[in-house]
Picture 1 (cartoon, rainbow, N blue to C red):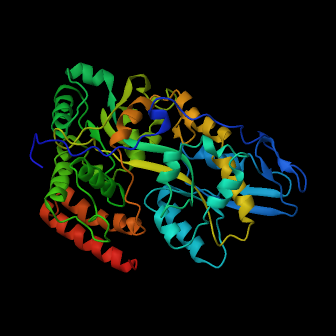
Picture 2 (tube, helix red, strand yellow):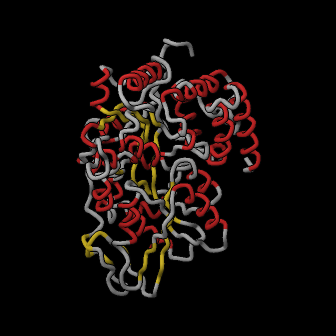
Picture 3 (cartoon, rainbow, N blue to C red):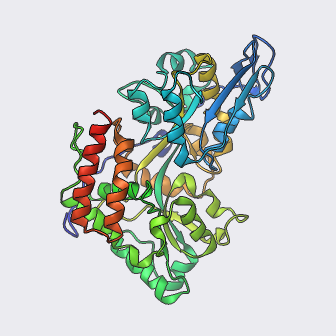
Length: 445
């Protein structure tokens, strides 16, 4: 798409709390945290589940973060009592998918409830690894106020029209910037890549910040996400519509790679090893003044106990690659699914997942991320919320295809090599196309 061309058609995702009016919540999940005696409902605090009559251990697989912890700990901390023990073994995002696949593939589950996200959720559903929840949702809607979860989010986590996940929170990629630094160099918030580079260069020239821009570019996964967002900004797609065929060797993918590479001169020479934690550290310590991060990962930046420049951090809609394009962003929705091969009663696991996505968990998480429950999201006083809501209409989830995780993994090396200059953008796009084709075939699709 030539510079200054007409914007691609807007592809909107509108949520109840982003539009006029919001959904009302029904009664909450219960009022207590202790599991009561045999055969009774444990509703003394936030844990309304039917207590098991024999010793039962439930293992939850969820990566640790300020956004996910309130939801997973609502189950592990809030529901462990009496005959019920809910374990939350430590894991990180990088290890979660591998552990989940190993657990799902065995005769019995190592993990009974699994936290899921966009690139892996369709695979789990397509292979029958997670329980279809539609009947349990219908039967328990009033008890757990499931109508309080935004219906568009429920649709976003569905696969082939069926529910396999209860959503916890959503996020979009947003721009992070230092208000004081932009004021110092006399620049406005960038709205295009050209403005982003110009602003970063001004910061580099006029301040002691030598690498003003920080973005997760790690080839193990982050660079594929940035490539997808840049392609989205240009109006492109990862796949031929309706087919298990990648669309990565054309003009727009080459432009996306070239655009990402153009940012390197104003970034750290270590950026190709950066994931979100490294970017957050750069911004917290003042080593960077501009960044792109998912909205669910930025809470520590505005926490004065964790960030040296907390009072100067602000958020905005991300820039577009070219003038008139879409913001460089995507929509991510997290949630909980139940392992089909779990030996624990699936109804009990569903009840626990409802606690993990309930009102108490959502309120606890609302200082770090935007919950899936509509009125709690409406009431949340979250610094990033305004920018996230402004970005949301142009954000799209990853394609809901079961080979998405395999393709994302395959894209890291060829896209990373091209962005870092080891190969040309054209060579990178061709290699990405070949790697994606091979990944889809290897996955059996």
